[in-house]
Length: 286
View (spheres, rainbow, N blue to C red):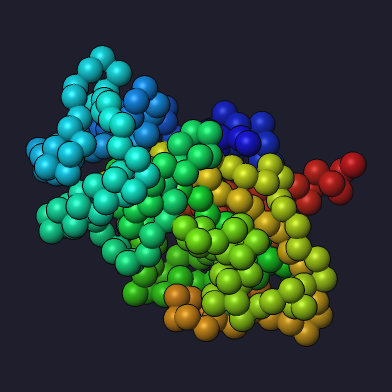
């Protein structure tokens, strides 16, 4: 598993994506200074925006999870089990939502994982970025038989990145799903595609990528993204079914590179597309 830092992208992506790499934010970026790490029983758990601590700290305390300032950040020592911790996070989420600090509420739970990938709790999906929790998601880069890239245009009703270019399918791995179940559910819901639509689909190296960075609008995005690369059979094309995509379009690799470098893609989709195009280019050299 790799972490998507600028240093890693410098080594991995084609030099054609240099403007995108230089724009990328990670844990060494200046906006990271706005955040404090919060730590549970000695393990880094998430990131909290310093500006919101007057609201966040009382919410944690009232939920039975008092955070103490230490040299490492904000620390919690607790023997709470998974059920108790999940209930506390529900209470915290509702409190912060009332203050407008949990935008994009979904009524959808995701797994809260520790650094070893072990299940610690479950929480509302929208809370993950507010608290900088670690979640998991899939992204799927899809091409036609000629090497042109299918891209989606995000609905303007989306809370995050409305109207921007995106992968054909992407989404969080829900608390009750496997990676494969999420892959085919998202492809079905967002693009009307199923296994019979593809000539092939496979994991895109490195397979699972850690994205950890401060967000422009506040909060911290910390997600393990499982990447896929697929080619549709001739005559097959994506068609949205859940209203989250306004349109699909075919783009040449050159047009995709330009769109990535000029910030027309969401950051996650841009990285997935750049990895796929860089991998294809490297394979052609080999």
